[in-house]
Amino acid sequence: MSTVTTTSSNRRQIDTLPLVEVFLDSKGRDSKQTRATYLTALVHFANFISAKYSKYDLETILKPLISIEIDLYKFLDGFVSIESKGWSSC
Image 1 (cartoon, rainbow, N blue to C red):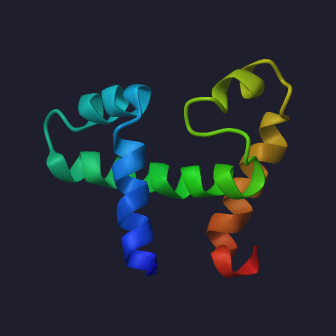
Image 2 (cartoon, rainbow, N blue to C red; image 1 turned 180 degrees about the vertical axis):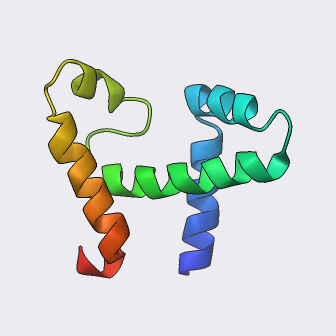
Image 3 (spheres, one colour; image 1 turned 60 degrees about the vertical axis):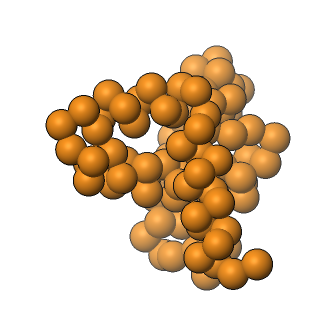
């Protein structure tokens, strides 16, 4: 499967998560481009969660972050590090 197909498939999966869909719809009320930009960011975030916290997804990661089961600062640092270095360093 090519990267383009995988990314497109990931976008569709993420876009249909109920809480994500509500969030994106609220962000995209005035602009489809804004919605698409947020979706792209969420795809990156979902890929990070999948790679580093595989038992969670965009919707289920919130509970362990809120309950401090997962250290929020380490979590965000990991995401920012991967985004700034690029995924090839994973």
